[in-house]
Length: 188
Image (cartoon, rainbow, N blue to C red; front, top):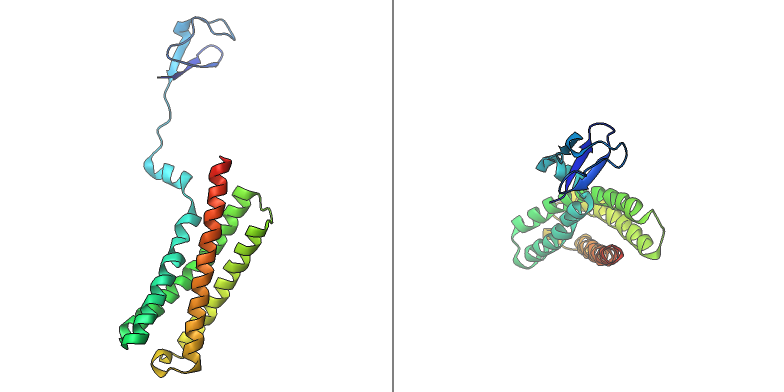
């Protein structure tokens, strides 16, 4: 095991299983070296230092939107209102998480890709912006007309189309995100 040794005379740091016979800087003998202990990092600190918020936050809309679409479909074909209510609550959670996911994605783009405006980033920014707008509009429509699934008509069709468009956005965002991750892995 490699240990770090510090010369107590001049401060030189040596790496090896044992200290050197003589310090290459000041000539001090090996008994003037002390072993340095590696600083112990707590699990919490390590998690904070290594935490990547975008891969965590992106799972919320990517998981909740397909679930929401499934619940709306079940409500539509079964007339079970609790699925419609649950879908609305999921939609509100998506509304709360999409801006955070967008912001963390921009942060990663600047940190990991130096903010380069390649075509893939333009697509992701447009898709994420579209997703934010679609989510706001969908929540607004559903909030103003809570019974739209039971009433049917044009507003219900619009609501369903908006959900499908949001589903398309997260699918494409995930696809482009996977391409970027593969590029990062290949680069490293």
